[in-house]
Image (cartoon, rainbow, N blue to C red; front, side, top):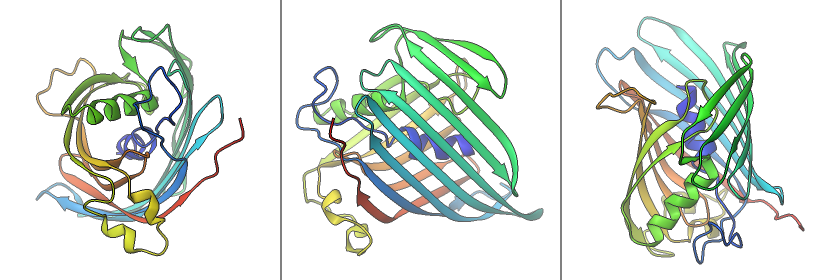
Length: 277
């Protein structure tokens, strides 16, 4: 559950700023920003166990000159049909080099105030399109080989936007985000039609706490399915749907876990200053 929240609002929302000729799509200048999403139960299946969910997700994307930073904190309280409510927190912090080859990650989860998981590590690729190695220091010392073609979250986002701008509607890649020790995911993405700049304006733009200018960029609705490595299962571990803007802002977020799904509604949005590099 925590892994999905982190991927959606930690990895997939990380994005590149124009000027990197290696990967940035033409015309894309994605904005460092801070966004807060109200989280709530979207749907549940009979017998699924979860009867309610509420909380907030705070996402911060920044430019550190030599790389891109993500800070994501998710706080959720779940209600269950057969027990007391459970309060959870999930913190996900990453740094990724602008060439997409180097990555640092840290995860910390709590359950009713008790730490339930800590992950810390680094990963490096041998070159564009090549494999690499991930090294975990927590929860235990572990080295993992990353297959050829693995992408880190920011680079995966760049590829999504490249495909969207070219009018392509499918992208299948291997993604490593460090939120679990089982390895990278196979991610199948479906990209919807283009909404031109200032078209189909999000309802969130009417909120005075939302910087509406950040919601005026071209956008696409996307659906992503995440499959565990070597699982050979016809159904994904989880799915994420969202509206993705060319400037790196995301809205209309729905995370589906099989038996239930969560919806994220944009409540606050503000630009962050760009560094003087």
